[in-house]
Length: 343
Image 1 (tube, rainbow, N blue to C red):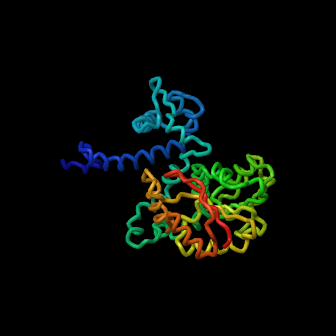
Image 2: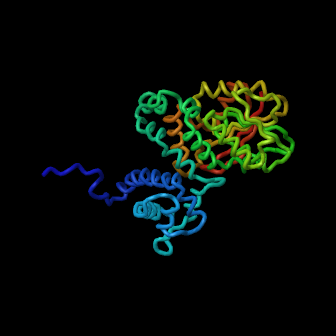
């Protein structure tokens, strides 16, 4: 009898160096497991109360035995806590998977959707050519794909929930003096919804919402009670009367030439006193984790874009006829706001 090939190593090497590499394998498995738990509604139910595994499986339509195994894997990573036996709760880390501002659940869900995983399987294409693996696999850019893929568009919108931009923007800019806020290239409504809800004098416009996500975005605006103060126009024509224009995690999705082209399109609408806020990660020597370099590789593989330093942003803005006036938020490994004006 011929033994079948082993699908995994017979044992985990016990040297500290080998264990560091083994963690990458574990991280990939856990990321997919946690994304499945988010999609299945398990995390949502765990945020409500602490049901038994059997009750949790009943509520979410999952297999109790397999659910227990997924939860124990999460417990080993510090995401869940078992107490009492057969009852699991979210740890402090696990609470970051639950829906709400700052949630990382949507980001995990997006990273483990079928179209994104298929693109990652072709990451070598990006490594060899510098071109988007997503486009090579799917035959279209991620932006064109989003326009026809409501599931992926919804995942992108939920992933934006991980952004703390809704807290950063009011702390960085004098919004009381503004009236009209325009979110350009919006992946979802969360940022503008939060700003309109917190600032009743504001009106808003969402430009560039993917067709497949429009109904979901409109419903989110209605639920938040701000639909009457937010325009959701067809197409990508920029309003001329904006006081604040937002680019939230948009420029990293673009290569330099496309980024400059987008920025130049904003120059005519940035009248005297109007501001452009570029929101995202800006790598620096103070960063302490591999998150931003990992996002840089993500942008290369998914859309041919890149993360940029403050100096690189300044050069990009200068090419477009814009000036970086201020940077708000200097904590390492976190988002910041670049305040930009017309030169």
